[in-house]
Length: 264
Image 1 (tube, helix red, strand yellow):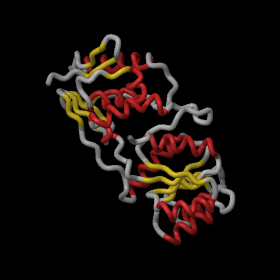
Image 2 (image 1 turned 180 degrees about the vertical axis):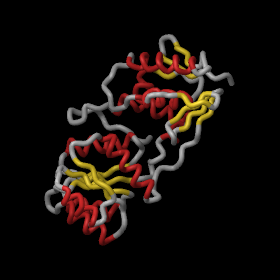
Image 3 (image 1 turned 90 degrees about the vertical axis):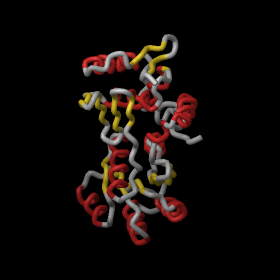
């Protein structure tokens, strides 16, 4: 089974692997794993701050990327040459060899996309990194989601992005994972990201009952929110569907959670 999220730790405070394992196993058999289309892509995370590196790996793995980690410049080059990753996240301030020197050597050997991760605010450092061939950069502090978005964008530009995800059609609903958009009978439905994720998950397995914990793992994977938080999102989602002319699609399954009911 694929490993999507590491166990909760004090360093990350994120969701445990134990919590997600049963859900992800079921999704594998229901076809939901197509929503994580990046599994064949490897990202080398070069970062000497263990907690930050762990967090970055967590988010990347959750999106389906394989990751390896290096804590210094020399180890980074060893892993780069051995693994041939699809992209390198490279901190500038590293022990052994600094990030700019690592970048020089990577560029002398190939064109693997590189995103610089740095605490340096000076424009000179960023410009030098870009001149040496970096594809993009992020400056600390940053949101891990921003880093994942940059990874996707750079891989897409380089022709190594994730494969297209199929549009899900369920009754009057059309769920487009690529555009992050839902249409009801052809009309666009205005949803929050959490609401979209919920509907996307349920549309991937219509008529299947999802527990609140399963839905929370999909909608808010980085959150410590309680399962009852899903009730609020589902209430809003149900209201929006009803206003769009699609009442009765979301059903509450007593003692379990929710399901998207589409007549077979």
